[in-house]
Length: 153
Image 1 (cartoon, rainbow, N blue to C red):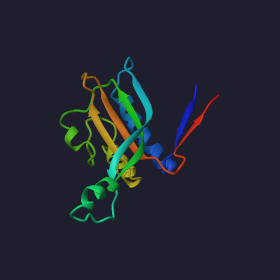
Image 2 (cartoon, helix red, strand yellow):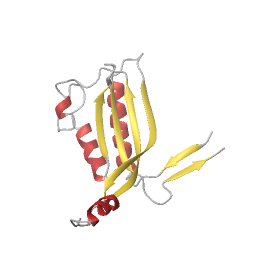
Image 3 (spheres, helix red, strand yellow):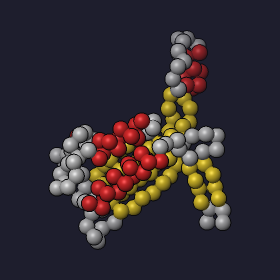
Image 4 (cartoon, rainbow, N blue to C red):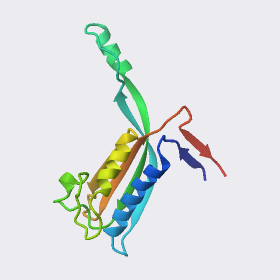
């Protein structure tokens, strides 16, 4: 079975802190008979390039096409079957002191979001559509010409 390795530019300690925090929350709000699943995948996103001025007229359409580039991201998803994100907390989930837990300060997701954004990434959260648990996604840009390596064994 091939092993695919993705490369992102990140501070190992900070990225570990984010993953640990999300996993800690998942386990905290999931019963012993529940589950926590972690996945990693590559995602392609079209994003506009910055820095070029678009001229009006004939070149406008051509320029718009040039402005788009395919950007690849690593997406780490942590999905649990716990209690989900409380509706009262959800709108301010990534704010300071947002918590419904009896342990913790409510700073973990606030700090995690700031760490991920400092690495040009995004942190998303949703309640699962089946009403059981939540899903957190950490999205980080892949770097370098060789941003993906496949090992076979």
